[in-house]
Image (cartoon, rainbow, N blue to C red):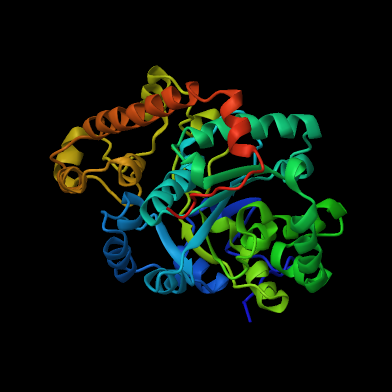
Length: 401
C-alpha cells in the first residue's frame, strides 16, 4: 500500500510541498531528506547512475550524476525489466500557465529527452490546460492557446517526433482515456483526496475531480493508438518532486484496476535567483531566467539579483572564501555547466577565496546565455505545422527502434 494520506490541513507543517505550493517555514530551505521520508520515496544513489551508464552505453546526464534527479519510486524495477529486454514508455507533462518558460521548467524536459535517446523508448507529454483553467482562473481559450505556445518550447528541446506524442487534455480526454479516469475516480474516496492534496471546503469540485486526469497517462491503455495490446507496458515518469502526490495516489490505485504501478524519477527544485526558498515565482520576473530573456537581461539578472555566498569585501573574501552552500551562481552551474572538472575547479577556488564572486557570475552568464540562445533558435524553427504533427493522434510504428 502506498503512503498516501499524509497531510493534515489543520496541522502546521515545517514545509509544504504539493503541486500548487512549495514553501518552507520562515522562508527557509526545503529539507529533501524530510521530504523523502514524508513521501515514502527512495534516494537515487550512485549505483543507479552506474547502472544506467552500463545499460545505455552512454555517459549519464549531468542531472543524474550531480543528484538533480535525486529520488525515485521503483526505478530499479524499470531497469530490471529493461535488462530482461522489456521496454517501457516515458510520461511527463506541463501545466501551461504562462507564455514563456523559465529554466526551471525546462529541466524535466531536458532530462526526459536524454532518457528517450538513451533508452530508445516512446514518450507521452501531457499539457494540462484544463488544470490551469481551473487553478489559475484562465479562460478555456487562453489555456488552450498557452498549451500550444508551451508545446513549441517543449518541441524545441529536441524530442524525436517518431517516438513522441504531445496532447492537451481539452483536445484528447475521452474514449479509453476517460474510461481509465472513471476507474481511478471510483477507487479514491473524498477523504483520501483531501488527505493527499489538502483540498478544503472552499475548493470547487473541478479541483477535486482533476487528479485522475493526471493519473491515467501512467496506463498504456489510455493511448490505444500507441499501445494497443500492450497493457503490460511499464511507465516511467520524470518530474519534479512536487508532483509526487498525484502519483502516490496513482500507484495506490494501479494494482486494483489491473496495471503496473508507474515508476518515478524525481528532481530537486530549481532555486530562485534570490536564494533557495522553494520554487520561482512567475509573478516576479527577476526571480528566474526565462527562455525569452536577452543576453542583456541574463547579465543584468545574474549580476543584480543572484544571491551569493561571497564575503562583503575582497579582503574578507580572500581570507574566508565563499559559502558555497548558499551561493546561487554555484548552484546554477551545478545544473548547467557540463564540464565536471571545470565545476570542481571553480568550487575549490571560489570556496578558498582565490576566485571572486564577479568571476563566477561571469562564467554563469556565459553558460546561461548559450543555453537560452540555443533554445531560442530551436524554438524559432518550430512551426504551427510541427505542433500539429506532434499532437496528431497517430500510431508510432518505430517507437521502440
